[in-house]
Image (cartoon, rainbow, N blue to C red; front, side, top):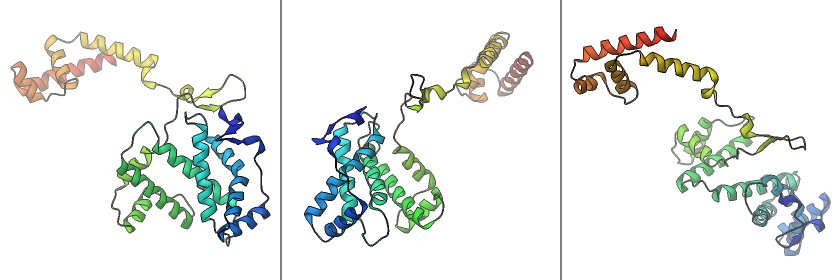
Length: 264
């Protein structure tokens, strides 16, 4: 776990300074007016905020130094774009900006490669969703996102948008803990996955089906195999084994009826 690391990118995290809200406001006004020293002080004074956000993205195999640098890029963007005239705390604006920068970095560096066109559509959909969220009281639907994209000349159906958004979601490890009480008895995602197809009841049913099929004639078994395992039509089976399609249909129906009686 790298969040206990003392030094990241040459910065001693134990000595990171913090700024009061009043000092942030003063420096933000100066920075917006072009004061480079005020901008530098704002960056230094908010590195602890970057570090706290970077800690949320631990355990993904990424270098802590790289994530910290990416987080700093998000911080700088927040400083340069923050509107000092709005009655909003800087951290309220900066946190989603930093998180967004980190998520973009992780998506673009994901080992699961997503095509550029799909990524571009996903980012446009995310921007549309963010815009709609500011004007509506609820989470925008995919249909609303598609409509917003159409206003910008982007014609995409709901399936395309849904698949694009799903494609950029970070994969989750089966060993990701979903609960831990501090002991060794953590619960992981894999502990909550259940295969209902491999139960004792399903195995009994499978054995019963195998026994019922064994009771059929060789021709009946052959017809069922061709129909349900190889996907042949009744006409194709008739041509292959040299009987009429009506005979194939009669043999198939009779075999299935006997199997159902044996299983009931």
